[in-house]
Image (cartoon, rainbow, N blue to C red; front, side, top):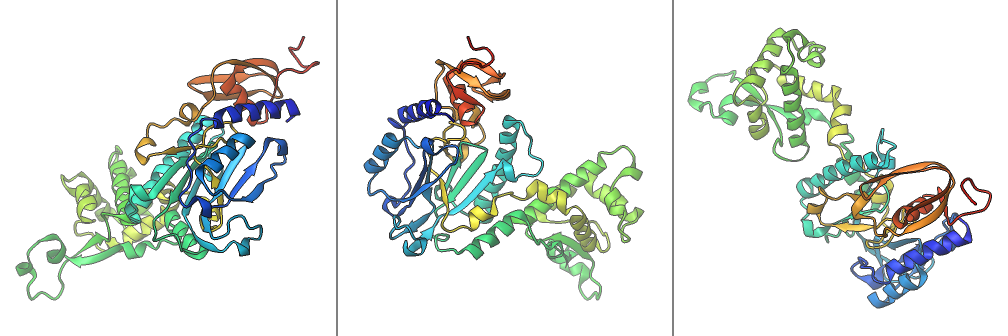
Length: 414
């Protein structure tokens, strides 16, 4: 990035910060702040151990310095501006989750598709936080990172003192690491669980047993119920019975009789509904507890890909992490680090809603061909002098594929 380009970006960022609504953190004086300035690009040298005593002081600094990247600590410190970390006196830290397309397997290269995929992962994590952990929406802050993903800040008093080891355990739970499926299936007497009537089996030594799914209405149990019912629907949708349930047929305890009963269960009026609502898993299928656990073990990779949450473990485990400030701009894209209500995520389109710059034409020198979708438009630029809307110019420059203005001896220059 040449000096003229750096000055252009700093001017545009400064104009934004003049009236920006910055999401200042709670307990502001206890937060460490850090910055990367355009003058330090592309080396990205970070200036940290900064603290502010008031909102006015913070906002004045952002406007005056117009940094490329703005961070504050997820931790609370007694002395946040002390340079040695062990002298800051750690008081606690938010529980942070970072979902970034870089950490997703087989993430698409197209930016729009990448953002759509990471949004799906964000919904999965939201389900864990609200359902499994029981946090309220008021305890959770959701932020679009301005780049390739989303951040969750959990500020419940219950999590502030958690250490790194406890936070890693949370990540393990979210990912489904070390799930042991045998504990989710058990056998219970017919009359006890499903209301057959105790008088029928009174005095009998061998009471008929039924398989039930433990915790079918919440957490990982609910996810297993959904996975099993979707699988059974899909298999029974096949044309020929001989093609149904090929994965289960590999198991020595599964024969034609078991398959027929599974088909009957899937096609019965309340069969799949009973799995979801009651945890009921079979009609007189012997050893179905073992069969179900076998199937889940064999399908674990697909199951966890569908239901597990892919978060950046080092971010969550780090109790002294720096994270982007809501309302600031991302120096790698020029886009807004935007705070969202959980209910806004569904309709949120970062390629439109996180773009803050205007339409006025700006000349740039494109270094290499590049394409991106912004504000509902497909933008494609070739090497050489190009005139593009300001929001596109800022994005291209921040991405490192263009310089501001035009240079001599470049294709298209006069």
